[in-house]
Image (cartoon, rainbow, N blue to C red; front, side, top):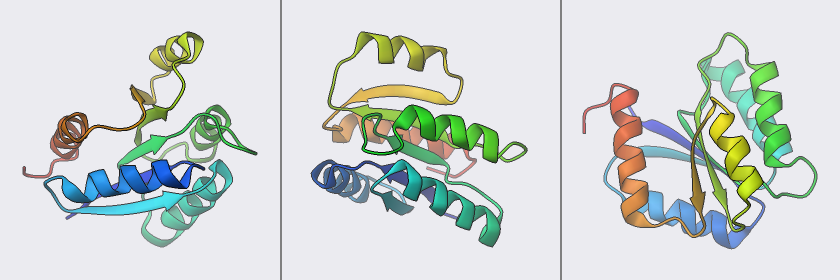
Amino acid sequence: MKLTVCIIDDDLVSQFATRYCIQQSQGDFDIITCASGEEGLSVFLDLVENNGSLPDVVFLDLVMEGMNGWTFLENIQNLFKGHVLPRVYILSAFSNTLDRTIAKGNQLISGYIDKPLSRSFLDKILQQERKRAGFSS
């Protein structure tokens, strides 16, 4: 069984770099990419309708046109009550102390990562997430 990872980022270069980093790490992953919070919600609704579950891990940009990352998080918490929610890692190009403080207080957020995502940091995250999801290493 694969760990499902979703990247939600409107910066296509960052999206590509994160996807590439995941593809280069050890393990078998299904990778979903979304260019906006709205697209992410649509994909999540489709996933729940088709297979009853959400992604295991989300790498989420906070600063996006339209629906920002905070609004996306609020929506998934409201729309998917009763479902196992994904563990969210904020992936941001901006070091914002207020965002980091808010992120630490949000139970859905597992970490705050500065872009670009490093391979060694990603490997640690994915290894932890695979163990949490009950997959063998």
